Image (cartoon, rainbow, N blue to C red; front, side, top):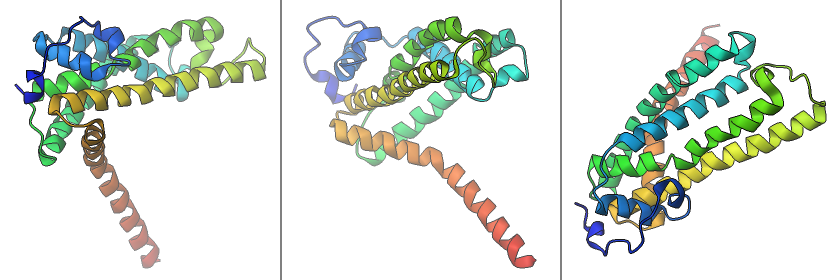
Amino acid sequence: MNQIFETPEPSRELNPWFSMWIRPRETVRQIMWTKSHSYHWIWLLLLLAGADSFLDNASGRDLGDKIPVPLIFIFSFILGPITAVIGWAIFTLLVVLSGKILGGKATFKEVSLATGWGLVPMAWGLLLWVPELILFGDSLFMKDLPGLDGIVAALFLLLFSFVEISLVGWSAVVTVGGVAEVYGFSNLKGLGTCALAVLFMSIPLILLLLLVAVIGLMGMMAI
């Protein structure tokens, strides 16, 4: 067990679904102290966050113009969680690698619990689809939004988009706090650990862009 958990056990029991929002370090410490290493809550978080992310992408891509909306919801709870699990596993592995590079010591299970519980704000974001569907219905997944005045619809969409982006951003914030806790790092060093992991994740994309640029340049030179 990481030495950080040798500190006194939290005096008041916290509910991670709520406390993770503002007390991520104390929440993760409690999870470790109580040895709540079961992943059943993590799988639920991945299910909810994955479905929410899939629905966001489907709406942004006007997927309702191509396939029936009920099918979009079915896919969101099948493909969304699968994508979320893959992304979570890769990110966790890279955080473990980054933490070791920066001199930290934590097991994969400890880090995975921190990154998993960091999805709490995004999981709650699934509730936003209730008012959105009430206001827009199936047209939420289509290019045109009939039924509401253009300006009113735009204002509502802007509001929902702002809240959704804020939830994603706050998930990143609490993830940093959780990762910092399992490694015994400061919040700033926890941020550096997560940033390094994101950098590692972006390397394949950077290499792909460089390859495309080189191929394009060679094509221009051959003309």
